[in-house]
Length: 100
Length: 102
Figure (cartoon, rainbow over the protein chains, first blue to last red):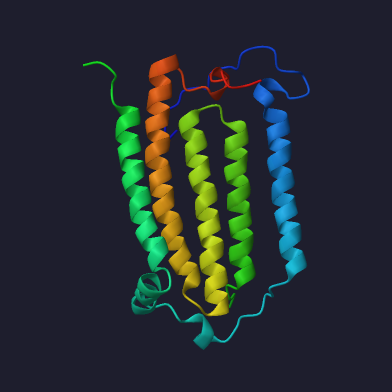
């Protein structure tokens, strides 16, 4: 596989038999339920299979995106820079070795 | 000729999100769980872009930009946490980290 994981480690004993080995059964059931529920919800809202006019769908220019980022979403942009700084410092602090 | 409408994108996005949750539920490896969370974030990005294009605005792409930056920060901190956890317990199995479980 991509991650070169030969096999996954078995879970410690003590899980109930309802959950199956490593709780796989209920996990698969839950994710299948989520997929079915989302498809059902998409069928309900009915955004439509018809295409809208091409002029409304073709507004995607770098100038418009930059204009939106640097005017209406200015504060979010600046706050993101602080978030990245905090994440960088946090990653360095968490991943360093304790004793050299 | 098959035209791609917004529902195609939304169905693909829903399936991607379900695949991501299946990965979080089923895989017993912390790095794979982190990758599945990234898949879920990208499914949400696809929804934002598709609906923004459907409505004819660029706000979907702008918020996708912010989601991508937050995902980058999350991946960095998550990988650092996984490194720290692996040094502590010498395993990547999430069932081994139950110290905060009641």
